[in-house]
Amino acid sequence: MNNNIEANWSGSYPCLCYGDWTLKVNGVDVSDKIPEDLKSSSMHTYGTYQSWHFNDDYMEEFEDYEDGLDCENWIEENNYWLSNITQDEKVKQQIFYAIQDHDFRTGSCGGCI
Image 1 (tube, rainbow, N blue to C red):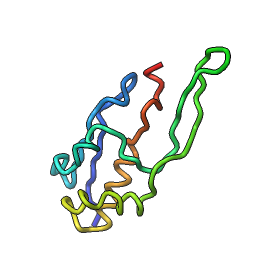
Image 2: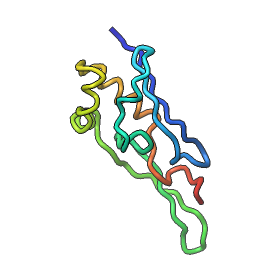
Image 3: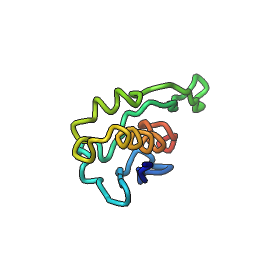
Image 4: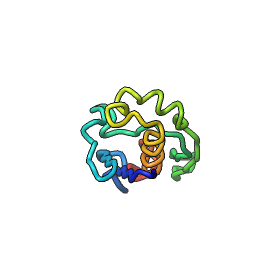
């Protein structure tokens, strides 16, 4: 059975870092199960992200970097709240991938430049 998992981050350019996560499983809003310290921050899923800095000519430079936990380790790290949503490991994996699609890192969009 393929479950309908929806994860969304409300932040967007130029304020990608400021927002909140919403999570729905089979149409049921389970966002209240996300811990307070994660509701408005990166979820630390594995991916390629960008950081920026000013170079010697005071121009912005963006660099790609990899960061975060892979699916198995992310589930292990977050099982304390995921288990309040489901005991099904496949659903937990689907939650990871849904969140990963919208995950970010602070400063990655350049809106704060």
